[in-house]
Amino acid sequence: MNRSKSIISIAIIVVVCFGVTFMIFSTEPTAEIEGATKKSAMLVETINPELGDFRPIIKASGTVSPSQDIDLSSQVFGEVIFVSEAFMPGNMVRRGDILVKIDPIDFENVLQLRKTELETAQAQLELELGRQEAAAYDYKQSSQSISVENEALLLRKPQLRIAKANVKAAEAQVEQAALNLRRTVIRAPFDAQIISRNANIGFQVDNGDVLGRLVGVKEFWVTLNVPASKIEWLDLNGSGSNAAEVILRNSAWKSTQYRTGKLSRLIGTLSNQTRFAQVLVTVKNPTISQNPEEPYLLIGSFLEASIPARKLEGIVRLDRDFLRKDQTVWLMDDQNKLEVKKVDIGFQDENFAYIQHGLSADSHVITTSLSTVVEGADLRLSNEAEYE
Image (tube, rainbow, N blue to C red; front, side):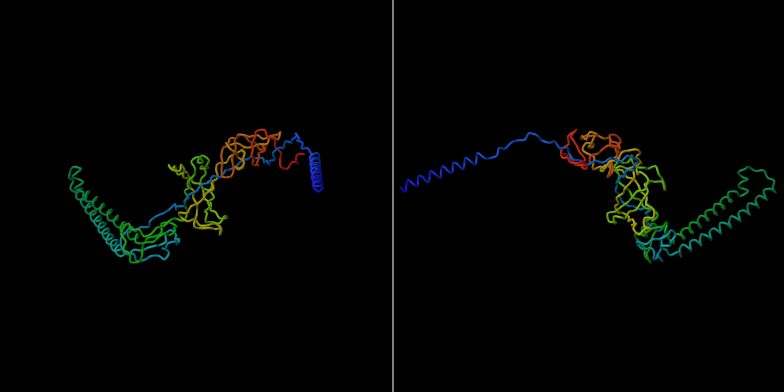
């Protein structure tokens, strides 16, 4: 009896499970595929390029050197008896300032001796003039007829020429002695900065010994290395105040600090290794500043320069970031379609491309970076309303 009840219970459970399973599958929703899709245009931003007259900036770098750089040397021999306090490395001196004195006694004695020799030669000339006058009187009184050669000897003309020559030689000796005496006082030949000093009191100097190094402070040179391809764009026609102004900076200066120079000339050499040409920039009064923010120039320092190129008139300028591969730009045309346009670039500087052909001021240049670039693709501006 119990067994029959168990079988009946199991059968009931099986029937219920089948029923529940049937109800679940019969009420499951049916998945349907919608065939309609909506095509979306790419969202972009655009700008209009600039049309006008521009002066591109050419970047270059180079080093500072003095326009005047000399080794101050002695032109006479002797003992140094005076050294100026200004004759110290780093000091500024003016043209004509006395830097060193050499013992002048020997040179004063030589000058006095040469003056005595000159007086003697002048006296000999005066005596010879008297003898010639006497000889001429005697010859006139004698009424003799002799040859021209003998007449010159009789009138003592060769002796007169010798006496005059002796006077000129003595005068030259005096001038030389006076010059040597002046050379015992060594002066600054121009406004300069002292770089080094080798002379001290008691120092025995000989002709040609170097006493120190001086560099002129009126003007420094900056020799810049410019790519050979950029040379034709430099404005080298100006001179003086009309020369192109160059902005000079150094990495050690503050971002607000700079110096200005004038583009002077093309040096005319081309490096075989780098293929860079050299141009010269002049900087006036490099060690003097009227502006506290204007730094001094140091000889040998490395500078970065911004050189204005020749003026480009009536040309389109575009930010280089929007120049694409193979000298192309992406445009949005009148039908809001993508156009890949090849352009003719006349010049590029650090920030801009200057385009001769292919763009106008009305062109809509795409500034957005696109992952997929397909000619004719649909576009829409970022400020337009979203598609429905």
